Image (cartoon, rainbow over all chains, first blue to last red; front, side):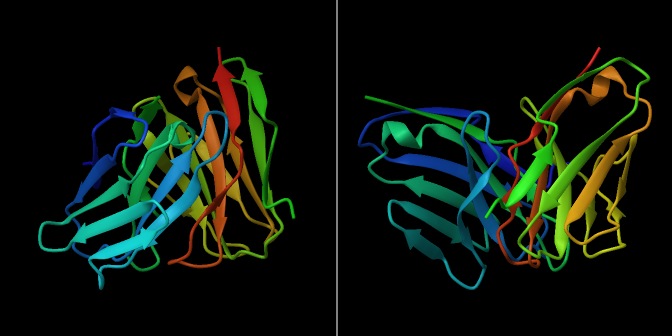
Length: 111
Length: 112
């Protein structure tokens, strides 16, 4: 049973456009929702994270939107750039349990 | 500041051979994790540790063992490698539950 469902699997966006990646979860005990960015040949790196007491968090061009009632959260990348081309993973955890990851979204930003 | 260092970076094993993957962190983090990454499967947790001398099973622990004898090191062992264990293995560490994980650069293991 997949605890965090991520979509789409792949995404192609024009330079300057908005990239949107969605995740859904079932476990209502989850209380920490990070997004990780991974470039080829590298390990994932924390991009941005949110706790369920807020509905939105913005850091530069990256925004997490969180909908507790729908059990969904999403990553928005504004003004997408070719350098944003990477694989993005959503994740979640509750309490002291380790992170569970979505299956990833491969983003390609084309000029 | 090296962060999380994984050795080796690449390895080819024959079926039935054993090996140990080493993860070392220099950030004094309490928690350490081993994940495997396979195409289309995301990152799946193998084992983890919440402190020196402790280990716990993750989602896919079968065929692997771990040890955390020192706080800074977390070892992942394969006793009898199988082709299904061909994967990229990532080690990560964190200071606590609600902190970001710092990942190593991975070990690409091929079992033939």
